[in-house]
Image (cartoon, rainbow, N blue to C red; front, side, top):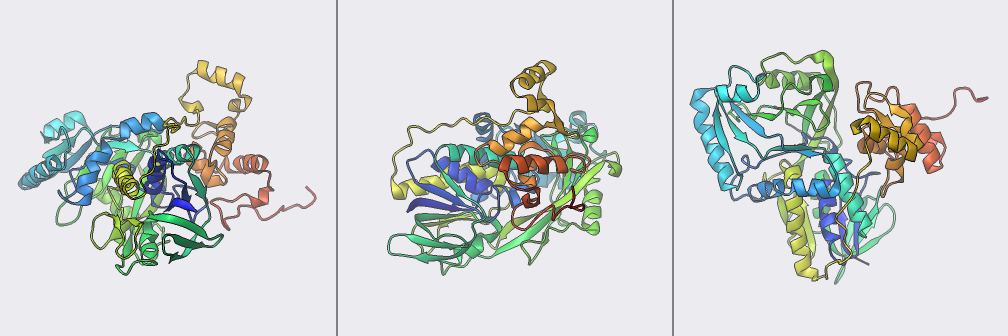
Length: 479
């Protein structure tokens, strides 16, 4: 019998898991995919919003700025990349400056510090590549950028080291209510638990509707993105938004923590939660709208890839964080669309406050907040490289040339707590395969390393778990 079972191992579920590990609770996280960060978490803007966009009084408004303020300490404890690069909301018409002032006041009401309105010339002094059409902007110094999957992996590893159990490729089929607990029916074993935290992202409505008469409808809202090579990553330094108008919110232009340039997203409501297609029309629209912010044309020959992610849009257009009606000890954390990533730390503390009030657990006196990430060869000095190669010879073999990822890093990613078991798992933990060639060079070598480390045939190595087999057999059986 678990005290708490969290459904979903995205950034929200893993944030809650890590926060719960501070208490003496028997906690479990179940995830339908083969790894953490497999849904919306791995395909979003990677922006830590300052908090001026959310309506005051809403759940988003209450939690965004609070979550933002927690990122620096969290990144230091868990050793994941985060940078306060600041953000700008551009205004292109003088008559819209009043809307910029409204955004300023809204942000101040939400508790966002240090907001200031700049003139167009001040903006271009700060960011020379911003368009001459910009007449002013709202500057938010606390805006930031992060690596969402590295953050989620760090949270999960630390939670696991502090006693939280994770069950992957475990899909909820039904939930039965008993007198004092729940029985979660999965594709594997039944799971008995006193409390359930529903952090299932796109599927949080489905999970809620298994136990509550108060139904939740989640609409998948697809956002497409374009990622450019690091050679133009310094085109801008701050995250560039556009002032929302009657025609929409526009798209953002931002550097990433890894030095790339990212533009997007659009917003298209879908019926199919698994639809992650990108379209020529969508990409063209993103580039056209992003070009409104930047003076020089985007060098399309520098595009590495395009991708999409589905956000969880609820009918309330706000986070749903509460005990489900008619389902005692079933806590919904649903409809976590933007700014969900930015709010994740504060969402976790809010949910854990609910749990501890109900279960009254003792604190875990052995809780260790520190987690060290994989040592990155590409970030080391030559002296540091020599030292680590002496210690771990596998660091002397570069496997991914585009991202300078070594065999030592890949082996570490597999051997760590909740280590990689798939090609995508290695990719998310090390960036091997994320460069310009998009794993064209390194994928076969990574398959070999996974096969050796996991002691499985190469034909059993998958891209992302399940049936995503990469190799079906030898083309010359005598070899």
